[in-house]
Every structure is written in structure tokens, then in C-alpha cells.
Length: 337
Image (cartoon, rainbow, N blue to C red; front, side, top):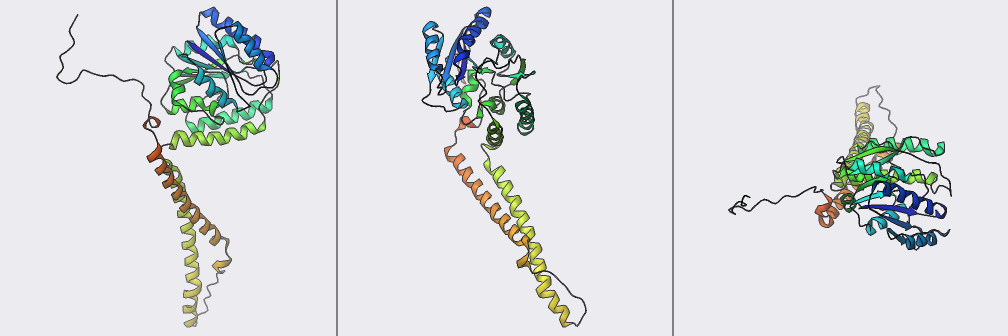
């Protein structure tokens, strides 16, 4: 069964049409499904519309938040309530076309675990399109998973993927990245993107700032989750080494000023070693700060390693695809026939 998870935040005008289009798309292909609406603190009467739809269609289920907790929380609640073998996420604003649902399932049947939508012809304002392209390029460079549209909310994946990733903050856009880091097969398909007819976009400039910070978090989680010292310690050693070089240079300057020059004066030579006192050089402050920063990063790395060692779970370090149990040694072979 397919579990379709739709987060809702003030989308009352589009819910009836969305429900009808999903039913038509799945009904035409005979796809068994359940539709889960998650009301993320709507204030426009969306919950009353959802309740009405649930009374009319037993395939619908609904979850209501006490207030707005964000899309990642809504999707997590939807996955927690889902009972299907496959999960499909889509937005409630009608920009995602339910007619694309069978194509997602066909792609999964080819052996993939996650299928991400790609809005080739995106019908959004330019100030959302171009920053999104830059963001997608950055994600590909930092995570080694190159997709054209990480921000697309139209995603389909197997239930095993949902059981192995945890969504919080705004990590919902990184579901393919998190799944790819655990060894799942990820791909994308081109999807039809429609213009928004009702309401307005819930995202602004802050979304891209938060997205960049979340990207750094995902990079750390996928690359250094079980070895934080490799990142923190390496950065700390680099800072410490640069600081040491700076102090070594200043020590040489001090020696030339306070040891070499008196010796030259004693020999009655005209050679003058003229250096500015190291106490007035900015390099002294920079070098000392770098050494302190390096020491702190090393200490943080050791603390992070202790946390991973004593609180980490084995299930966080690998992902099992399949298990086979052979017959025990000395047991008779299975009878033929």
C-alpha cells in the first residue's frame, strides 16, 4: 500500500481538489493507498475541511498539531502514522501534480529506494528559482549526491528508508542525501510543476539561510557522525600548527632583537638589526588565538568521540539490506522433493 503524506498549513481552498485528483490518479491505476493529512497549526479552517473529507472517505487519516511546528515535524508525524510499504510526500498547494504518482512507483519498481522529483520547468518567481539552483549545486558538491532539485517536496521512498532516517529542523529536503549516505539507491524523475492558484508561499529569504545551515549539519551527520574528531581534530590541528608557526617566527624576531644585536654592538660593527618589538605586532595576538582555538577544537573532538562511544547505537553506523541464515554445522541437509 502507498501512504501519501500531505503537510497542510492554511491550504483550505485546495484540499477538496487535491483529494479528488489523488483519488483519480491512484484509482485509474488500481493503486491501493491511504492519504494522511497533517495539519501544521492551520488557522484558516483547513482542519474542518480535512475532517469533512475524512468522514466521506475511509482511506483518509489526519493528524493535527497544536501549533505550527514546521514541515519536517509534519512529515515525521505523517510517517509515524503511515501503514504502507511505500511513502509519498507532496505539498497541499496543488503545485505538485497527483497525476505523476504512478511514475514515481514505476521508478521504484526499477530497483530504487528513493525517487526525488525534479521540477524542470519551475513556475516560481526568479528570486526563488535562481537561489535554489545555487543551493542544489552546493548540496551536490558537499554531499556527493547530485540532484537537480533537492528542494522539491515531491518525493517517494520505501518504508525502510523512513525507519532509518530522522527528520528535525528542516532536514526534510535532505531525505535523498540522508538515504544515500546509508547506502540506499537514489534517483530522480522529471515532474510537472503547476502554478500556485490559492494562498501564498510560506517560504522567504530566511529559508535559504536556514537551508545552508542545515546543509552543513547534513554534511557533518553523513560524513563525520561516527568520527567527529576527524573533522574537529583536523581543524584544530591546522589552527594549532599555524599559531605555532606564527609564534616561532616571533620568537626568532625576539632573538634577533635581544641577542644578536647586542653581540653585534659588542663587536663594534655598523650592522643594525632593526625589528619592531613583537609586543606591538598583530601576529602575536593572531597566533595566540589560533593556538587557543586549536586546543579547544581538539578538546571538543575528544568530548564528541566520548559521546559517540558511550551513547551511539550500532544501528547508526550501518544499514542492513538483507540477512540469510544457513543451516547449522552438523545438521542434516533438507530433504529433496
